[in-house]
Length: 301
Image (cartoon, rainbow, N blue to C red; front, side, top):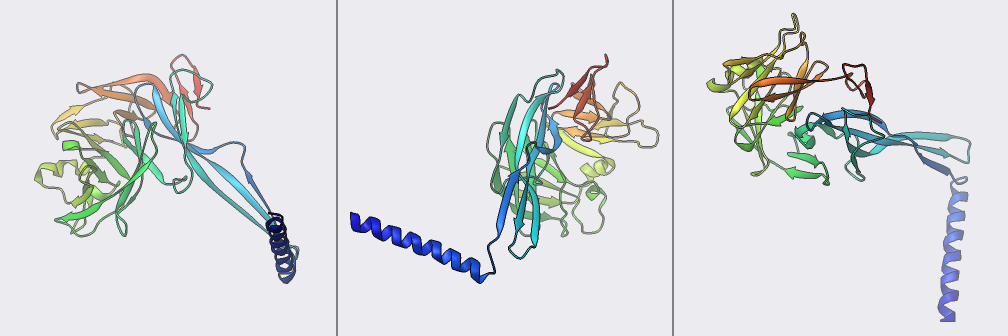
């Protein structure tokens, strides 16, 4: 036993000496300091769960400083450890109701938007690697590898909107794709059960959604949000026939957000083809603040 202890000590000493000689060979050793920021950064609303809960993503940034023996130095900075939190935006509370943070490959910048009422999505690859990552409240994220199909088109696009669609699938598009011409694909249907994404052009039954600023389905009905940015007379069109107007001031911007609808500064629901908006307003992702009619300001902190 005594011989083994001495041998280990000798090997350890050799390792230290080797490191010292390496430093000399490199004209001295470097000194690196790594620090995490005390507070998180980049908080943004990812979507609304219902008429009182909102999902917010943020991340933590770090700084790394390296000083070299020759007097030079390097500064590096990055962000990771994305976090998803659920807040009540109707009542001022001390913090979120629930949070979960990530490490490793699931870092900031990969989450793009709301997938369904309690799921966000990110990293939808359609060129080299066909996959999408999903993160559900209370669970760890996972990535689904997808088989890509083309129907009646040959030029795919990068999707920046994924919303619920008919037959339990999801519609993928971007802000311009519905109006693409030629052999460009206009939208895609994502099936998470079959693990497929099928790019298509609009057939005659769906040509009416070309003018939609946002589109999704509830069960078998297709709803289209049309924003009139000139006079603010915006509305929701159901199945290309019925128009549903919001009972409020003029609306110039908005989109579907899970089972809710963001219309201007309002958060609304669509129940039995009636749009009902709460008395809560918010400033958007510039400031995570919500306002009520009585002047109450709610901060997500």
